[in-house]
Amino acid sequence: MAKKMKDLVVVITGASSGIGLATALEFAERGASVVLAARREWALRDVASECERRGGQALPVPTDTTDEAAVQELARRAVERFGRIDVWVNNAAVGLFSRFEDAPMADFRRVIETDLFGYVYGARAVLPLFYQRGRGLLINVGSIMSEVPGPYVSAYAIAKHGVRALGECLRQEIQLAGVDNINVCTVMPATIDTPFFQHAANYTGRAVKAMPPVYPANSVAETIVSLVEHPQREVVVGNAGRLMAMQQTLAPGMNERMLATMIDKQHLADDPAPPTSGSLFSPVGPAASVDGGWRRSTGTSKARKLATAALVGIPAALVWRQYWKETAARSETSGNGQMEERRQPSSTTGVTG
Image (tube, rainbow, N blue to C red; front, side):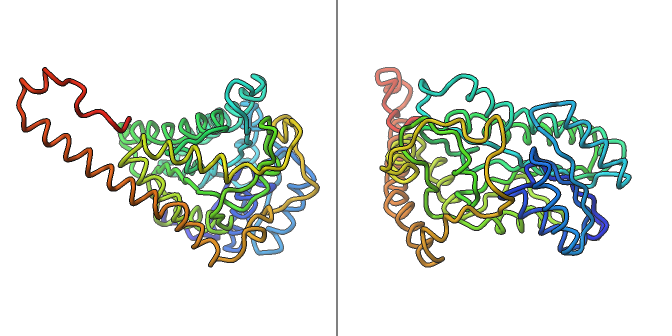
């Protein structure tokens, strides 16, 4: 995108906390005009003041992204104030921790409505504007769970898989439309230090915690800002996320089994917790905040590196061993000819996926 950062108009959903707030501040420090969307009007006003203090212009627009009309109004307000939209960041998200069969259906549906349909509404609001101008950047903040799902988060993982698929579909339609200057990027963070986990709905009976290693929200914000000048189809934030995605590609069955145990032990504490719908239906939390205090509880960057090694070191070695074992088995089977394949149709099975 040729425009200087200070000339950009950027819409950010979920801008009152976490990654959205960090992203708004990052753009504002570079002089961009930011349109801030979230449900908490008073929090948005505080964020807008801080963005203006850092050098940007800011317009707070209270928005529930599960309401398509409200998202359309968000786009209209942005154009009314600044004349155009250059970048749209779909970021608003909520979480739900529960065994699949224990999750209240209203809560399950709310996660899909926010984390997937909210992004659909955002894309439908801004893409016509991008096509009119022949340029624009849509950034969808997914999750490493867009690639690597886990237990207790089925609604969230389903939604984030959908976000990744949305980006893939839109890029192909833009290509067929012959428009070179509209980009759709999917950002997939690993575990990030935000209030997301404190705000999540929880029906597991155990307290939710951030699974280490935990990365700062600013690392995601900096990645999002960098996409303005260097768009990428998909980008994972956090080394642990990249290694998990690699393991999922090489040996999905083994990776699922390892992650199931790991998430059960490291994403849920032994402390009991009462059932709660968290922030699904109304905002929670005393004030706008970027971080959730998880990095303080898990230690320094050195501790994060140790956690990364623990997360992926031995599992990665096992995955590679299984990968080469399966590759050798496939080669041996293919070398035995079609007659052998007819006698042993399932000889290459082992790791699923």
